[in-house]
Length: 426
Ligand code: LLP
Image 1 (cartoon, rainbow, N blue to C red):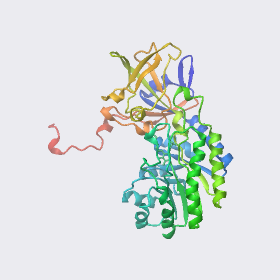
Image 2 (spheres, rainbow, N blue to C red):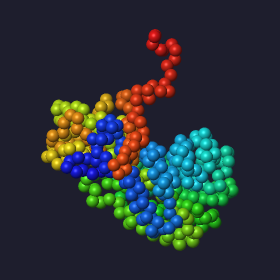
Image 3 (spheres, helix red, strand yellow):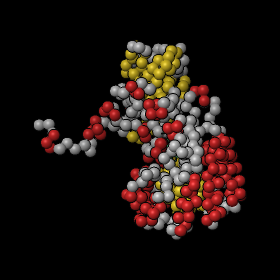
Image 4 (cartoon, rainbow, N blue to C red):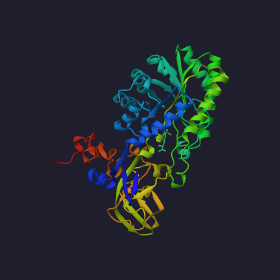
């Protein structure tokens, strides 16, 4: 994003052009920024450990146009559900380019996951006999809860430790791999996902040691080698302006991970496994924005700017109290005063910005731009109150493409069936 003479643009496409061409609210993604994020991270990790690969956690932004950018860059796909495996297949990816890390799976999930032929990553030892009912995967991983997790988004996305629903308890790791070995599985992987949005490089070294101690012991005692270790996602981005000067030092994170990894490989005498991570936010978070419009301004107990960007468009503030920075097109250099900002949903959690210094002259028709909306933005949007999902647009060096239609009324009633006795008379 660029601001010149107060006018906001995205890789050469103005916010005005987006609004006039596609309407508001609209999600905008910068292709080149996604590529730059990916390349920066890949170069850092490969520099410190050559046998390294990224899988893109497609849950964070599942538009196939976006996922294809990451596929072109060489990413595999981390799938959380059978439908996400199908998204990976739509990208032309399958087999060992895709890892299925679902949790609390149904028998149908297990059967379809197995039939899809992707790498199966089990969230609990109790899954193994259920998998074996349908067939025997050649390669199997367990998602390990190493007993510790952390997140800058808060406890909401701390995905490991005693409070989390995910992963194999550290005390069960040995028995889980023993059972897999006894069942005749010959290739093994290990996985964890202790937390999301972390900018502290040391954290990544710390969690690497945690999983490697568990895996190293299993490797030694069970005489098995590991094909790969997947450290999950978690590479953080700054959301607040005051954090902008402290982005994640990706080279330091990679160095921390590689040092810990090599140290533990040596300690346990392991054959060096492939190292994998499956970030999402780091690739697309800061490459995505929402362009919305101011429709009503209300002076009541306080001044509230009403826009078409609601908790349904961007759930993170209402769900997690998450901060997203807001810019106002054409007014960034104006003096500011603290105001609130909301969407059009009949819930008070939709009053998602309070006391934020925004440009004083903000008025009806102005365009507002929400930053860092690329990850867990559109993917978590929903059509509550009949306020339908926005459009998605990709920009690249002055060009722009609609990559998902805005929802329309027909989408609200599609797949709905009214029994004859309830239908209004013609
Ligand atoms: N791998 C697995 C198994 C995951 O569950 C996730 C995200 C990732 C990778 C990617 O994590 P990342 O690199 O983005 O940290 N909705 C929350 C974030 C939830 C994270 C869920 N899992 C938010 O908006 O902050």
